[in-house]
Image (tube, rainbow, N blue to C red):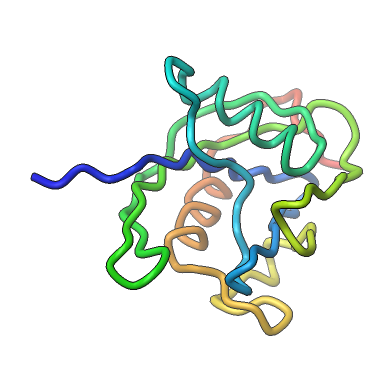
Length: 140
């Protein structure tokens, strides 16, 4: 059985919006990346969201994983998690992405502002949107 590199991804929903980052492949991405050696998935995801978007999050429930063909014949195992914003929602974009967007959940589709939103990310966002919310989550 083939093994694939792992990428942890955060589905960060705040006030009915999800955070998306535009990558160099002209696709919308969820914040996240590969864990460092010895780093657990929640710690890696907290670090990656901070590095890529300047935001602090609490990592919650794991969502359904997906095998994603990033480039032809190059696969990555996507492990998405529900995340909750801690603090403000002012994104500080890193050099790893070209643009950021807080997208209203009502506006979700396989294309956002002319850029593709891969199906595995769309599925993770929809799954996270159906998760029960904690009373401490912001609904403003």
